[in-house]
Image (cartoon, rainbow, N blue to C red):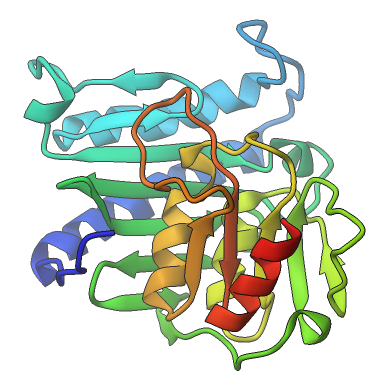
Length: 261
């Protein structure tokens, strides 16, 4: 990661306003949805995923941003010839935790993250069922529902409560763990100080950048750490690439999680 530079407050405020408007729209789409059938376009894609994508992408294009979305890939605003010519790239997961949403489990989200100069700069992760919203701005901290958040106290793995994706191996021995089913919310919760102490992806290379990038900025701005279990750069704009994010409130816990990842 490059050294973090504080993003202009006025510019970041405008981006957050845009993200909030989009999250209002996706919250409404999900609340009104009664179709949990498949889209027919690709495996495991619900029809509602496309409706959620339609609520996200056009406003971002109107603001001049290129978009990397789980549902529609890389798209450009009108009149823009390449990603490099856009105002920035917004990485979007319109509905993270689709299965949870279909089961009416209140752990699903819209995640948005603006990447500018190759770095995540402004992010929002919104729980679409509870209304909780995380946001973060590079160099300016992380917030939950408008309140500044920081990670919790340092602890060891045997003292930790860890969110997981996949099935950890036999060496994984935290105090407790939870498989919640929405990566963006799982990771963002590590930053709030009163929730998970860490996050471990034990499902080899199944997680894409739209799943974790917004939460990555939240955790880092809250004072936590997040890396790829295999040492790769987490910030990517390639929709085909997959990663294994591991997050923790402290370096010691991160080291322990990496040992059992």
